[in-house]
Amino acid sequence: MSTEIIMALIMNLLPLLFSVALVHSDQSILPLKSFKTSGNVTYDCIDIHKQPGLDHPLLKNHTIQMKPSASRLELKNQTSNNYVYKKKIGCPYGTVPVLRNSKEYIINTQYFHPLSRDRPGTHIAGVRSSNGPFRGIEAWSNGYALNIGKDQASYSQIYIGSGSNKEVNFIQAGFMINPSVFGDRRVWSYGFWQGKDGKGCYNTACPGFVQVSHEATLVQVFDPKPGVPVWLRCSIHQDKQTGNWWVTLLSKDSKPSLDIGYWPKELFNLLNNGANMVGVGGVVQASRSGSSPPLGTGKFPTVDLRESAIFTNIEALNSNYQRRKLDSFHIEKLLDSPNCYGLRLGQAQLFHRNQLGYFLNYGGPGGKSCGV
Image (cartoon, rainbow, N blue to C red; front, side, top):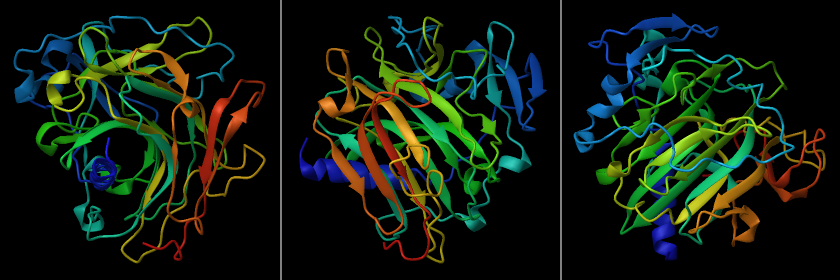
């Protein structure tokens, strides 16, 4: 993939991290059950065949894929996934949970200013490989509570993408704190996609994502104590038979993974034969005043891996669906503001008695001297 296409991909991907989207469920469909989680978030249990994701015009003839065509072999000796999704949602079989729109989550556009080529303010700390095609990306990651301004945002994410002639398709998942999307400063898990004609959105804010699990969703809220992480082990991969792009919560040892759902292949025109690029890392959006928010734990990486946020066991699926450590491919460091954020890469054997593999430490305090 040429340098020009890579730059077009990055420049078009970053603005959409902060694009305005409304989180909703279709209130015209009567849910079989509704409930609130401990975070005061309401989900409706909708008939899986009537879920709003299927309303996309490109999915008129789409048949729901109930599970990936090939099971994922689990890695051993991983950190427990108990921190995240330990309380499963539990919609009845045949229904799926859809986040309900409420005043708490309506976008406050007054405080939100999407990034563009003409608006600086985005900073990134991560790694990527452009030696595709890739069939997927996976990693452990953690998220922390941070002091984020109402017009700032701080993300940690895994992503895949392809670009051609300044057109971009991409998918990402991870944690974010973004008051302009959710109306609060809590840590949320999320998914985001962009497909044909530049269309896409967060989570289920628009039709497209097909929810399959009745236990967990792309979007959940967490209230971690300061300095205490929440963990997520997530995979984005292309199904061998259907070409759909699945998002899966991976488990430890021999426990089964939790396949949340997928973005159908019909939504994309540049991802049919895999993705040209994969990556992991953190991204922030500065406020209008030019002050950039903290990233990760708010601290620079040090020799102590616990000081800053981390991605561990970062692996990509190559064109033959073989799982490889990300550093098996040519990788590029992405760090545009070393005064405010940092990166530390490497291989580690043990971390809290768990295998790390290839890891990325990242983060920093932000501030007013981060540049443009």
